[in-house]
Image (cartoon, rainbow, N blue to C red; front, side):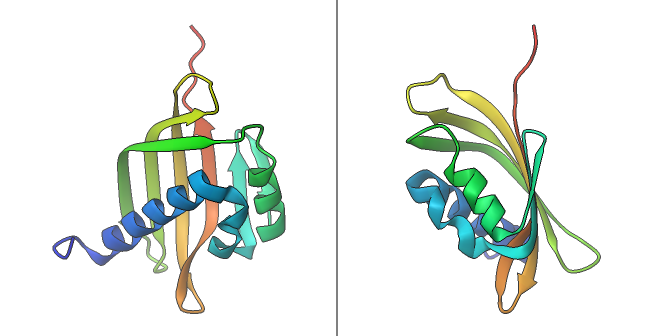
Length: 126
């Protein structure tokens, strides 16, 4: 991992941390957000740490498992990190579904936090 650019190391570590917490107990995700953070979840918008954690905690499943297929990270001109994740998830006994998720990470008070996040299931109308 040492030969990767720092933004890839930070982005990859964040993604691993995020999905470990989400899969184990998503009510504990509050530490990665700040009050100015924004989430768009399947087109619904939420702003602020409390609103985001409330949304994620109220999702209609008991257990979930994410499998990351690919992730890409880029530095931004304002010293943030843009991370794009593609993967699959399995919630409860539902079928496996693809998903796309994007994070904008910012260094805030000595830690990397998520200021912006967008999530969509990869559903297709056939």
